[in-house]
Amino acid sequence: MAGPARRGVTRRTFLGTATAGTVAAIAARGKAPAIAQTKPTVLKWAHVYEVAEAYHTEALWAAEEIKKRTDGKYEIQVFPASQLGSASFQPANRLGRSAAYA
Image 1: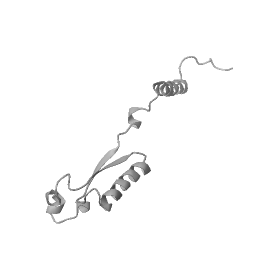
Image 2: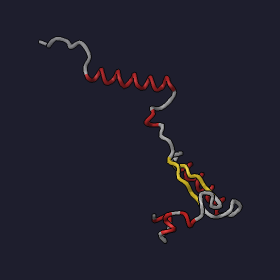
Image 3: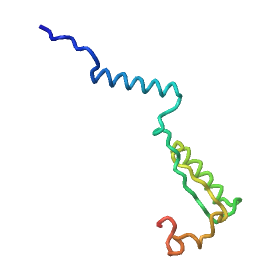
Image 4: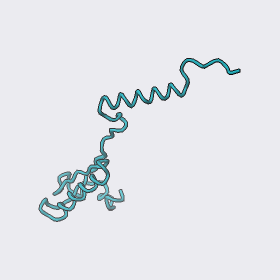
């Protein structure tokens, strides 16, 4: 003989309904969950060259390429002509090291 039919909510039906409800709610809002909407990591790239110099134009190109190739995960702000201060005020240079190794 077969046992009595189970009635009520099982783990499988509960999880299936909860998942479908979550997907429907996200679709109705038209947005991804907050955890998927991460802000880009912003990096500052400062240099001493003037805006007209090739170094600066290539820095802008590189910043745009990095943003594009990382799908916006990284954003690089380029600051030319010592806008953030002269090199002598940067801690790594006071220690006699390159900023890349600070």
